[in-house]
Length: 426
Image (cartoon, rainbow, N blue to C red; front, side, top):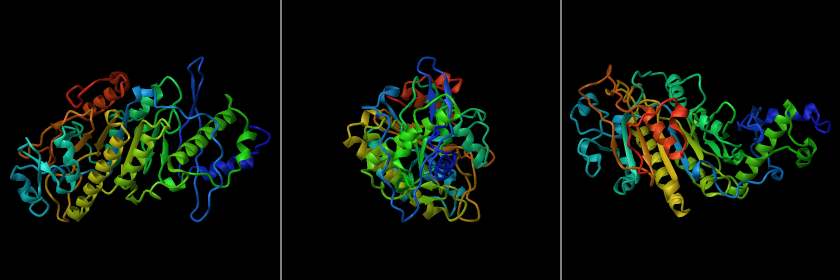
């Protein structure tokens, strides 16, 4: 460690860092290709404390997005287990039999042209325009063949492509890149995203845009620290410099101000609309962002589901609609794929509390110009799996298409391909 930065100062930076940001960094030797992980500091700000001037960037931000053929992938995680049957109400009369108080009235369900056996929840009206344009894929019954109703296990299976000892399936993509990506290349908004965690590279996590800035750090410290190195102190210096770059890049996007203040939280996640607003601004900025995960909680609807779920889906649909309006205006429509996931669906029958308990087959969406619009998978209420919608689409099929979109070898990343989901136009 540099003699000009004493141990007490170093630990002061680290202690204040981990509250908000988990910014992964690694050093790669360009001549040997070897990689070393580093501990990762970040930054935070206390309410009412004005941030000091952000230290100047120490590296040059990329002039343009260049990795993964310039393609962007945005994943919206609906944490808690989104209810398939009320999201995509079936016309099968058994739906009303199973849910005498919770089923949506047929007159309220939005019809999809060319589809006879299901419709959309009325709160999803803003995304119906993507269906009409052939840019919306509806995936029903998605889930693992042998389901698990635990949030923790099921979310881990989704994040790690059902290999619980492996990094996140997008984290493996980060590890496979030939060079160190820009600090905001992979960003989680609203909460942590193990999906983006690799063994060697980790994502930037921004839970509060207004707090993603420096407080109580002297700009002169960075110069005193010296350059990187192969020892632990060198790795720490490298990680801090990447953190500084991430904060500086984000400040440039927002002109130093908060983006929509904080991301309002609900049950450990962010408002989808505001999270996607931040995502759109990051993609449009020249900071190299290509992978974004927006986490949103509240979908664990065991009780009082009807009004709660309606508000949640309105947030989702409004966020997607506004996101693509911004994407289209920025001229990026051909380069962006957005997918919506949840760890499982909910049981076919309502419970006694006006809600539904943890189930199996769920719903996903894929939206964007690259998407081949249509309905994929099926729901058969006459053939339930222990009272749950039986999974009919494997998550690996969605993972495979996402990786195909990014131009990486899905078999190398996942260990196998699943080509059963004809989701993309190209």
